[in-house]
Amino acid sequence: MAVVFLVAFIALAFIFFLNYSQKKIVSGQLELKNLEIEHQKNMLQKIVQVQEDERTRIARNLHDAVSAKINLAALHLRQMVYAGGETESPIGESIDLLADASETARTISHELVPPMIDKLGWTYALEEMVQKVDRTSGIKCLFSNQLKDESEKGENAVHIFRIFQELLNNTIKHAHATNISITLEESANGLELSYADNGNGTDITAFSKGLGMSNIQSRLDILEGTVAFASKPGQGFQATINIPKKLKSLS
Image (cartoon, rainbow, N blue to C red; front, side, top):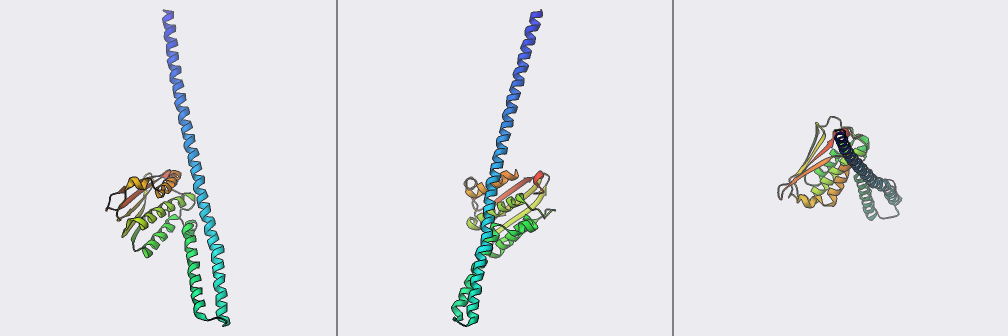
């Protein structure tokens, strides 16, 4: 009888050991997977940050170096006109061209790094961009901001701004839309950001494989957010973006 109990005890101990070992293996695999995900996220953040740093560098050079030289050249031409040493007409045209070039450099600089993000937050920067699209593209834009805190700034704010910038550019270039609607709302889980146009629609599968979607997804991965697309030929395009509550402050 004692032998039977001993065998049963050994069997139970063996089963317990196997079960414990299996749990340790699964736990170790899960921990390794989490470390891999965290590493990938850190690498992604570094890549995106390098891109943003390069945008900032180019924008600064455009503003500080190129614009300054253009303005200096325009000043020299004006001095020639005032001195009476040259005919005014061609020089006046040259001054106008330089003024246009300076404004173009300024516009590109602000598109690369919108100063409104750091000064007033991404919602203000986004609204300014939407208003510009409304003025210049022939597309009627509706912007509804129902967020309580409108002063969000920082790295995460830049990511959300870039996502909408990508969506707007896609509509302007490809959709042949006449209306765009953007709505910013708070949800139980964080932020719910909606984008829609009434363009010619797109193949969601093809769009998901494109460079624009890759840029959007990279930033959403950093934000730990999600996006759902909906589109049919001739029925426009919609995107619903959710940002989790722990990032709602966009610090």
